[in-house]
Image (cartoon, rainbow, N blue to C red):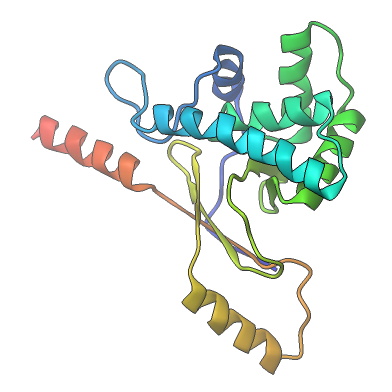
Amino acid sequence: MTAAAGNGHGTDSDTMHEIEAGHDHHHHHGEDGDCAHAAARLKEAPAALDAAEAACRTRGQRLTPIRRAVLETLYATHRPLGAYDLAEALTRQDERRVAPITIYRALDFLLEQGFVHKLETKNAFVACPHHHEPGELVVFLICETCGGVDEASSPEVGAALRRVLTGAAFKPRAQVVEIAGTCAHCRAGAKGESQALT
């Protein structure tokens, strides 16, 4: 199930520059163009990739080079990426063409293993370092200003949603809620700019 509020923005050339530079522009852009949470995002990537490798070994699966490359590319940006964005980024990195169908196959595997999530309203994907139980509600907060995506969880909201679904005798394919708006960092930045002008 997907619930969306507001309209999101798609990926753009800035995202490609982030990927190529290996820099994650996470939410707040400072005066020097750097971002407040970039270091935290990049710091979690190696551990998440190692965890994905370990999970695959435990499950008798393989995190092939292309699957790992797709996952690494998603960790290189806070913005959700579509299959064609990923194909373009990997083609530039490897200097050889990577077909979108190859990306889709890798994404199918990563989705199945719970290493990435799909944002239905954007038809794009984000990496996920968290472990989710089957049927657990996943909430995405999508910033329309910076394009960033935060993942949130709420057992109370999940329980309430399950009651609604049970009452409606409805079986969901996926329990995902997408909420569009403005993140705290962008709101703080806008407030600071407004105060500077007064």
